[in-house]
Length: 205
Length: 218
Image 1: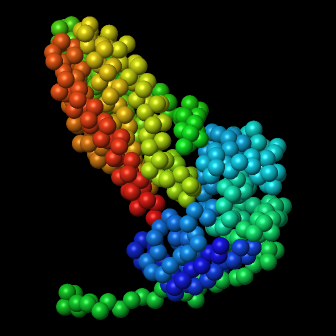
Image 2: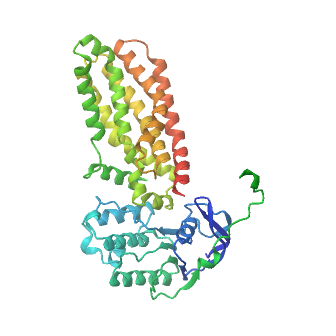
Image 3: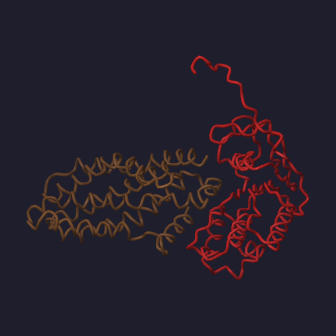
């Protein structure tokens, strides 16, 4: 099922940031979001994930199909890597076990370590491994490669390619070239225009 | 749901989890009261049910600001909100975990601490019953307060101010059950009121908590 976005308008803190967004994401496809800082990429991804309502337009095909990964990874420092992953696997009802996810990000050697003892890049790898245990078809990722080294970026790209090959899709806000075959959407062109206040009362001043 | 409960319990018992904070506070309050009001055993016996209830309530309040704040800080709440588990179930499970790690230990410790306050003999059973009925309401209402203030830095003050008035009915009827129990009076009315408050809180407040949490996550 295709994720399709029609005439979407989104707001952050009540201020419209993007409007008139139209795109669709078919199974097996990836879309990379570009745009300057503060343009509303994170807000767009959070809106698609259902964390906030859109101010205009429609989102179809997103309900209960999105695995969202934001700036923070949702990792508990006092639980081990295995416990963290196993928790998310059972919350999402994933039956396949977590070994595949550990292997995809080379976390086997760290599996018994408390997540608080991991480096920033290792934590990010654990956060990305969580996507593999959600079993959700649409990955919505916000700057997934932050603090990853070159090898880990390659692991991430391989995981995305494998996900696409299985018929999943991915929407990624990133500024580096992942080497994944993806369309690029520059959201800078959809910046919301300031609205004229029709009932503005100048005498008030 | 069970996974979330197991995780919350595990986190509470790991280093820095805060298990025992409420219990230690409860112990300190009840140990210090005889020193501050003097050693007359008749006075202690008459204030014991109220002091024990107040101590348990404040001990419960003490641990509320960690209830959702930690999950908000590390992004877990965002991820839980996008998970298949409804947010209503998630906040209920978190309230249950809070009760198991804070409320239940207080219930179990209360009769022991009652000895320090010279609680009259018939009062012990009713003290445990009243706390057992009342502390779930404290946890559930506290979860609502935590959901309201999640995302605020140092929201503990606001949380206490918001939650304390909501705690008052539970305190009044809970302490009344314990007091009448200790004096051997008829206690059916306050007991039914306390049970009603708890049942209503457990049934209704998770929906309110989930709704304010959705607003706060935006």
